[in-house]
Length: 68
Image (cartoon, rainbow, N blue to C red; front, side, top):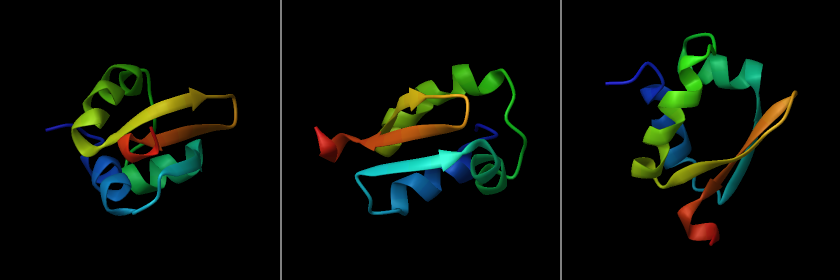
């Protein structure tokens, strides 16, 4: 169980092929502040049909496997 499970479930049920979320939006969806563990935990995301596509200073871009 990951502290980001709520975020992963949100992405999985979003029905979108791409999502761009700010760090504040991610923290609100996850129910926890982002910290360095996110870089390790993001490896769990393919099990939910998504991957982190791009990380910028302002936001993250998530892409669905269906977008390939």
